[in-house]
Length: 253
Image 1 (cartoon, one colour):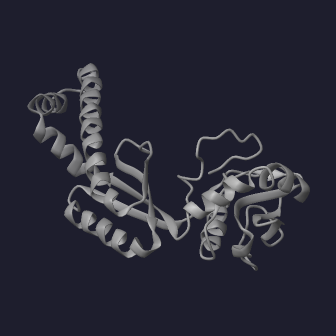
Image 2: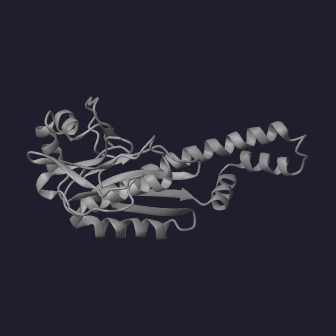
Image 3: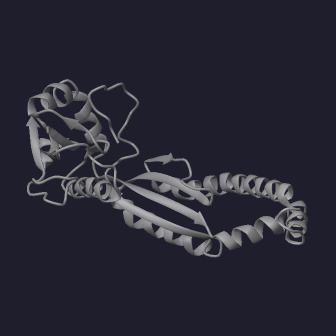
């Protein structure tokens, strides 16, 4: 079975009594300690761990609650090690100095994720209004049968997709630039679907979380006629945990 890992903390910060519905687990979360570090673990479930929404949320919830006690280096969902000795020998002991330094760097900081999605009908109207060629083609497609306008429909879809991609790039930069001054670091991810204007993570000092929340709310109000915003956090620094080093024994978030 082995031990399922959530993340690494300083031993002095390791919480006691974390007991959510862990991914497939029948036991509470506990700490595996080695000197000044600890790993948050629970007994791994029998069989393969399923990548389901409830399991992913449970993994995130453990890390979110651990974050209330101190900085956390989150591990990617699904990391299992055979036993406590392996965790100490392959994770905590050989990287102790580096892990402590990275935990110190995340002191009093949390990740805030911002997702902005275009509203479908306003987006389409805006694209058609901005480009007469697209609008003319759309009008022609509406006036013919599906069979007669087959290739025009394909071309229209391509033109609209290209226009959306172009304005998405502009919007992503604009929104990120508005929030960047409130963050220590920014990680911009790939859009999760074609109407997503922004998918970004911001590492924010806890003292500025209220200010950051207000800034996102302001953006949401300013763009309420074209976009819908979602703010997720505070979270452990999932988007900033991996510094690019080669660590074969673990998979950082």
